[in-house]
Every structure is written in structure tokens, then in C-alpha cells.
Length: 399
Picture 1: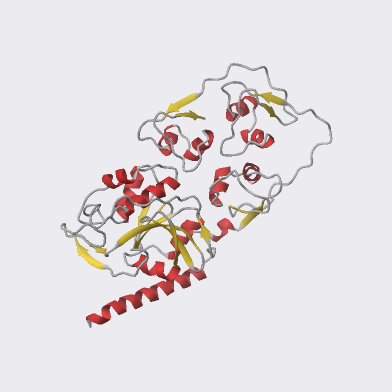
Picture 2: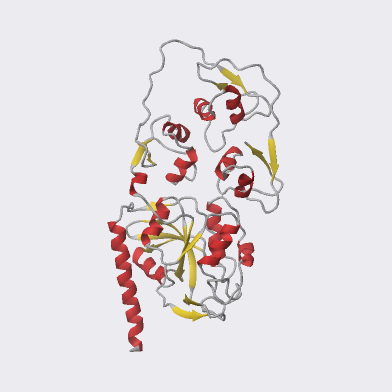
């Protein structure tokens, strides 16, 4: 009978994979999606794959983590559901109580301690993973080796708690899928690798479909039905303003790693409640007016100028072709203003600028939260682009 057990396990996994694939085909999720901007790095230690994946995953969301620091900050236990098991320098391929690694729950908890939105899942579905990718959020997944088949083993920790383990437990970051393949950032090499969907589902199932997600794995088909086709002269800022959106919301929805680069003919997804061309085009007035201008003074920035003139900063940015993520203006620059705006008043002494000096251990997320901002706004305001790194001693302007 024992010789039939491996065969039965493989058969059950294959049947389960087929079930997931049928569910995926029947769902309203798109057939393919990809998250751009996840940069992988090879793990530093034999058993530090989870910490490496966590660091690369966090970097995508704008938080810089050090793999080694993350590893040492994980709790230690003989139960991988509670903490890291063993030494990171030991040989890979064993199961507890020998050196092994760590499961999803402690990784998600430590990511939350760093200010990230992270939830550990066991029993997640293929549609959950695909929904996260469609929503622009990569997912840390637990597989066996380089997406190998494997056999789950029951394990009882010293304190009596029971869990499931498997030899050659490994983590990767799911960044994309299509009808036949998944695309994973392998922690061992830092490279994006492609694997068959059925092979991935089989390997992922061994440890009970474990994952760490930034969202809840839900997807509403109506959320991405509206689209807009980029026209000559369009900018992301102008398109977002037309549909009453923020530019970074539109960039995130379309997985734009460089939001200032869009091209004519590109199809952008819009939130489902927004209809294409929802704002009618108003003909320009026939009466001739002289466009007003404003000369930028030392110490001024776009938001301050707009507030002084009683205007939306987006209007000035669009009129002067100022594009994200910098929106930089400089002293002496002449800004065009809408024709109906009166000429700017005589320059006044610039209001003092709030400057924050980055401290050791700071992240964009922590600083933004301290000042009641969201971190993309702070990054945009200071011209900080992917991978959104900051350093101790750096001076940041606060809007």
C-alpha cells in the first residue's frame, strides 16, 4: 500500500490543479496580467529566501528593507508558523526540527511592523493570486524548490502545535500570469522565471497554498471595464483630472512603473464607475484674452503658487506641461496661467518651507504618515522615483 501513496498524492494534486484552472477560466479575471517594477536580488544565505522575497516585495511598495536585518528580526522557533527554524547558513532541503526557514504568518507580521499592509494566507486560491496581480500587487508565494512537486509532512512542534512542512520549502514573488504560464521572481537568483500554470499550482499546493498579499485577493470585474485611449498631447495628469482621479491612482491601476511615460494609442484602464470621455469638451471662448503669467520666486513650489492664486495645482501643471513625478519649478520660471486669471501680484517674501531631515531607520511611509500624507505624494513632491530609496541626512520638502 505504501508504494501507492506518492501516486495518490500526485493524482490528488493534479485533480486539484485542474479544478483551479477550470475556476480560473470561468472567472471574469483577465487572461493575462503583469506587475512591472519588481526588482529581484539573489538571497545572501542558504535559507534566507523568505527574507529576500520580503525585502524585494517591500521595495516595490516604497519601503527599503535589508535582507539580513529582516532575517535577524524574525522570531525564532522550532515551529515555522511561529518563527524562523534553525540557522540561515545551514544546508537547504531539511524539515523541522532541523534548519528549515519560516512560513507566511511571521513574515507578514514583520512586514506590518515595518509599516506595510501585509496579510498571510493559507488556503488561498488561484483566483486570489490573479486578482492581486490584476490590481497591481505582487504576491509572495511558498513553493517547493524551483517549482518542483513535493510531499507535505505533518509536524508537531515542542509546544504541541501541529503544522505542515515540506523539504526544499522556498519562496518566490508572483508578478504575472497568462493562460499557460506564471512569472515568478526567484529568491535564489533574483531573476524572473516562467513556469507552467499546472506545475506552479501543484508545487504551491504542497504547503497549503501559502501566500503574503498586500490586498484581500478579491476582484470585481466591473472595476476595470472602462478604458481610455491616449490621444496626441495627452499626459497622465491631464487624463486623471478629466476623470476626477489622481495620477498615481491611474498609474497604479495600469501598472505604470514610469508614470510620466505614456504613448499615443495606449489603452488605459479606468475605475468601473467612470465612463470614457465623461467630461464634455467645452469650446474655447471666441473673445480674445491675454494669457496671464506668473514668475516663480525663490523658495516657491507649485502647490504654494496655486494656493496663492486660488487655483488647482493640476491646472497650472497641465497648462505648463509639468509632468510627474517631479513637477519641478525654479526661480525665474514664467508660468502660463488661464486667461481669466488676473496678473500675479507683486512678489512677496516666500513662506518658510517645511524641511524634514531623514533619520536612520526612516522610510517614506513613516515620514509621510507623520505629516498626514500618503507616501506617493511625498515621493512625487521630492522627485523620488522607483525604487523610492531615501538615506539618513537627506532633506525632504514637506507639502
